[in-house]
Image (cartoon, rainbow, N blue to C red; front, side, top):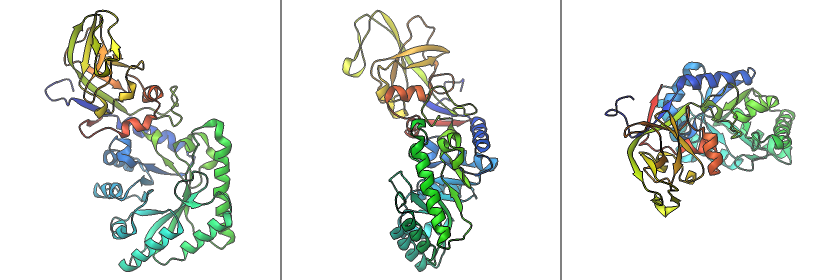
Length: 377
């Protein structure tokens, strides 16, 4: 990266050793529960295949993805652990689920019947995990009131000949919000109530039960069950979006670019689109070769953000453009080609970035485009 001739215009350095360290911290917090690593959305922009292979070598028990295509990509890369498709897959694609040995989430009883019918025509039996809606009110069999009705639905699905239930799970809505811990406890109690009703109805299969996301692992030890789902904390994100960090959890991605131009401007000059910034004095400005199309948020414009250029802190000025952004480098030793740390290790944290923009930390990296090179350390 020291040779400008071989460097990309913008790149994300990803520290796989830091990710493995985060995995071990979460594994310890899980207290012996199995570890499912959720690497959907191309591992939140970090690269699902490189991260998945590293986690597989570390001993991850399973992987979670959002879509069929993501699961297929992991299989083609050589990952052999169970892979759960957390989102909806059209029943017409059941042959692909079976061919790549993917486990499908069952979102409701009607979908289970559709999937079973598709598998019957293929003469295959598909592994599935049943999703219970215990309070998120998104996908899943509704399990917020009459737990027996939900349990009966699960037992009927269990009788479908071409589906094999190997797991049952739920998802917490506010495990990352301490002041709403009572709601998380209510969700946990709904989940347990359905499991108890299933047992009373004669369901006696040994299936894996899982509920905890990263926040659940870190903050709710009574919700571990048989397996946990490690997601954003694997990448070093604080699930609460707090800026103080979590012991043992280290950010693994640093977004960098180069200075494209350094220019002196007079007092009163307007900088960038909208003329929202006027130079309060004669100043020197550095133009960096990255913008919101490289996941440096436009909403950060004029909010007090800063970058590190050639080891020096420089305030962001003017409106952030699609491919460029500007920094006040008055009095600093900065020249064309100098390295710019936009965020990550050595610069602003993603929690600091997104607390200024009103977003969440993992959203920012999820929007990294393909033109941002990933460099794995």
